[in-house]
Image 1 (tube, helix red, strand yellow):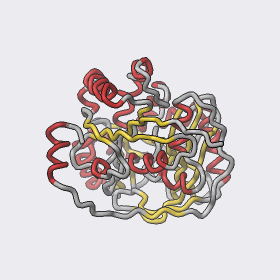
Image 2 (cartoon, helix red, strand yellow):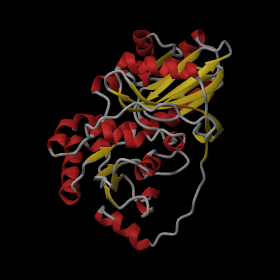
Image 3 (cartoon, one colour):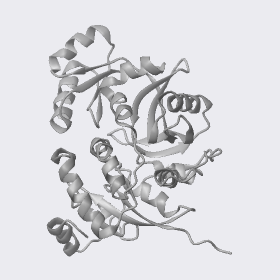
Length: 350
């Protein structure tokens, strides 16, 4: 006897698949492979050239939504329009910069029948890069020393306290390694022009970088966790190839993070293992990473599990994953008719 799987209409952001890709396409691939439900995917784009818009085997229909800087009311108005047309069941935001708006709108969206599974606002705020020192002290997790600055001259004081090189980070994205003050100033100007202030100056930890993606249920439990080591890195520091690894220490740190913070939703931990074997937490990304499809390939379909939690379904923790699964990212040229580009650009729909 076959049981009909429910059909969920799911809105997904992050459809850009460029050299610093958004997670959206990878998240959708996981949703398409879900064992417990079928899905219709509504792409939510910011720009007309996001590749996911034109991947019609991946995305069923796309709507443009306003940039986070437009404010929550403008976003809410647009989502109400989309919901009226599409009857959304779930929305999965995949960009750090948009999460604030979606978290603020969570209860209003739920009253319309749109489910999300996002960090609480206090969780989202305390894991910001500018708060990482306090976060490390509060939860007894080793973090590199760092300071948020609003003027590039403030960094000169840090030369006395930190050794070169230093990592220059934007409040949302981008990180540049600087080996002297001239490089630091150039990085400060470049990143602040793109993402605004403050800029975070972080101590550089020499070692091997690891990443863990996972899912917390909001009660302190680890629903999913898959560690990965980058094998090929772009000039922006993004993984272009990676492999799932067995690392009990990284998994123990992840369990501690989830239990201590009672994290709710998907996440990525960026870790550095120094020459003494100690792990330092470099960054907490409050959503699934662009390499999330590796977790799916390793046996943990995190996008599916996130939807189950959003819908209030039972979601048992995954029991293990396959070690030695690799992902290799590639560029793919799509041929698109200009009429489609004109349609999404002028009407905001495709």
